[in-house]
Length: 294
Image (cartoon, rainbow, N blue to C red; front, side, top):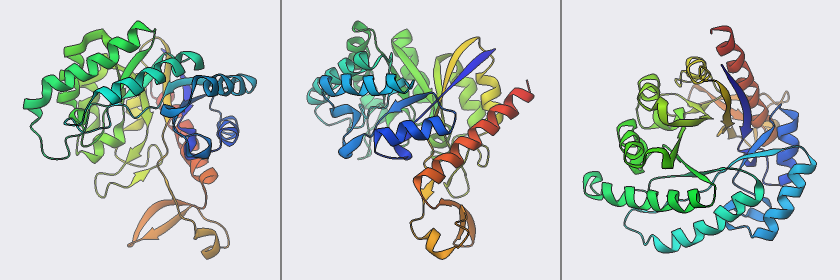
């Protein structure tokens, strides 16, 4: 059976890296998928020297880097790819310096209604170029499903994986599939052989609201049970995406963690620390439930 290793997009707890580290430690999370950093910097834009300093800080606090949460592949399929590809080369070096083997990527936006069939080979060409460069430097690109990109439904994700084979890893994000009206377990069954790790994010089909894990339609308990069948270490990356309602504390003396919005119980929190903890607590509960159901 798998041993789950917990990671998180800790920039949802704070943009300050020291506070991100503290949030992970407080919630039983040993790794970070790096994305947003101090001074509104992105992990995509830091220099090698900044990466070395960041690695020293993370090492000092016994926090590992599960992946670089890059935004590569988040341009239009009709945009010029070459500047995007050149910037990617710096992030590959940053990944090496930070001691991770994984960079998250996407498969390009189709916002103007372009034909998926017409541009499929161009998607494959671009993703393969990213993968080939990364692989040559000991780094693995992992594709995340997201609405609006080529790989927003499992059938196109599968086509991408079959075209690139072992060059490309996979990330399964259940909430993103829900936002594309995709049923979770059939999608997982279709893509299971290509999935390197999960993003732990849940949502509801009815209104798209993102919820703590297990409180939406993401089938998190069963998803974790199935993902945990393979032997070895497997990352689970928490991506809370829970709303922070700045005025909540002023309105509710007890600082409650939920509020009624349009007559519905929405998941809104007083601050990022509280929302991050709620997401982490839900993840720990789902792991326990999945373990109990094996």
